[in-house]
Image (tube, rainbow, N blue to C red):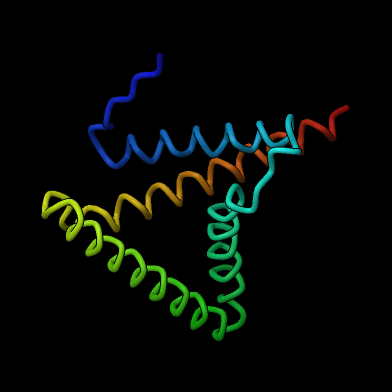
Length: 125
């Protein structure tokens, strides 16, 4: 039987999602046939944000693209938060966008960490 208890803070949710993302990366290495595009979307999003931020130092257009991407992402999160408020009541008011963003960031960063660690270990052989 599996038990779940809600985390007491957003930082703890983030750490939990980092572990999940890390585990997903290791799982995909072990079972590549289980790979789906949904598995790498959070990692791709995090990587895109990093690349746009770094390249924005040299090319100002990249910062404009980053701003547009984050604005669109924020709008989608707000719309989803409103949708959940209508469906489940106001108990989620204002929390949903932050929670979803933390889940995506944690999964993405954890997956990239697992990918990097596994790739570096493969080079040691």
